Image (cartoon, rainbow, N blue to C red; front, side, top):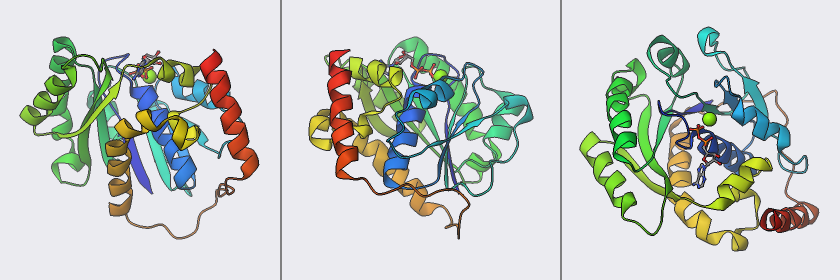
Length: 244
Ligand SMILES: Nc1ncnc2c1ncn2[C@@H]1O[C@H](COP(=O)(O)OP(=O)(O)O)[C@@H](O)[C@H]1O
Ligand SMILES: [Mg+2]
């Protein structure tokens, strides 16, 4: 089982967007995916409830940060969406089984400063300190017309953090969220410009998965193969995404 946690103390920095996109990517390319929602706001759960049925299944898991138990058995891939202001004991418990933590961060000085203190806290987590949990960061909602991406990259270097590039500020992400969709759900040729910026992220995800120990058998349903009808449905979703 692989556990990937999306963590940053600030609200609105793109945690739920990243978590839902990772879960969608894994559901399309792997199997037995669970999207765990530790956040009381339950954004990831809401997104899941809006997700069209014809897309590969993502299992939902609502988790209480104060009573965090081990992830359910039989799941292969877990993506955890977490709340802002996530510190101390709750942070330690939730990350106890994490194989990787991804820190989305905005470009502003305030965003970087909040993340700086947090990175130090994350580096002291037992699994991170022991080298069992990989840490990386990604710039989120970065205006492509500015040099903000470079500022985040410099910041990541100062922190000794692996840097996975930036996800641009784009209306498509807001629309995706509202329809239970992700960029990955659309036909590749229609979203190539978006997929380009996700490549370092999905590459990192694949590396994390490859490093995790393999699981024999599973109790959850495998996703069915993508059919021509699925692809047609995805095309029509893209039209509605553009129209809304
Ligand atoms: N790359 C992006 N471009 C535009 N809007 C984004 C992007 N990423 C996230 N958003 C929007 O920003 C808001 C906050 O993002 P969200 O993922 O909910 O952050 P968090 O979970 O950290 O609070 C949401 O409305 C989301 O749709
Ligand atoms: Mg959120």
